[in-house]
Length: 447
Image: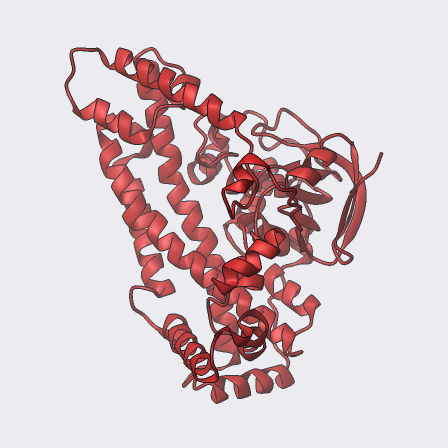
């Protein structure tokens, strides 16, 4: 309840819970966090037990090889990747949807959630080293920028595609499943876009490829902390490797399981079309209802059943869209009178830029992105193609400090304001130029 009350009084922290509200893992500054975020809510003995429990859990996660380890999660993700190749993706029929859903959950989203947890642990550890003055803020940024993920590969391969060094079929075989709006059946996949590789390729990668190396002094300082906390046979370089593996693993896991999600959406769209329904109509049908329709017999045709479901769910959707709620719902009163809640963005890098802005939805539509600040709603991997354009900055409506786009912008050294909230986002939609100062924590429309 202590943390809930903290969040109630500081609702702008709703997307920063892991870092500024709750203590969910061990870090090298956990003592200071306990005093700040727990205070007198626990006794001295309870605080000691709390700290020790997190320490032992973190040791097991970082050094372990069990069900919660990076290695085990990646084994499952790789098993899903093998099944994707064996089963033929879009060559399957609608009856395959049942196994695809199960595989996606067991070998995709659950392992990904484990990898995402490791990603949070890795970032928390980095920030604690900064808090202990072992790393500077620039060095934390450099570490994140030196991590090469699947997004780096995408930009490299898009460059090769434009230069004619990589065929379109080879490019689409790997990246064609991505779509701006991972779970949106209305959003086109990369392999359904004709102008994906138009424009200039970003040069950001060339600025951020050097792998960060700890100085001798930093190694000694980190090794001392590890020894004090009982990390046996584990040194500073091992810790840095863990951070790298956690960030890379998280993004790779998402990349793989979203292929299954994307293929499922296409199977559903094709099935709907065969029975006379558009993508828009079937987009309203819940997955469980669609699966039940496929496997059960009825006096009504599949088209009649799906069309009726679509109509009912579309009405519910219209009602839900008409209801406005705060970003954080803490009591019943907020349903009737919506409190004014302002989000504080998560700023990436310490750069600043003033540039023309462009609002991007699900399609490229030949929009010029070069030297523009791109504005999008969500932090979605389907928008990774924007990093192949020489964008000046990025602003999103939603997204947290360790979200997909936050990691991407840190990797490419792109100034960004992630999760700026509804009020600020709506203001930015009304202008065509924006000033973004990440060091000062400013994102201002220019009229």
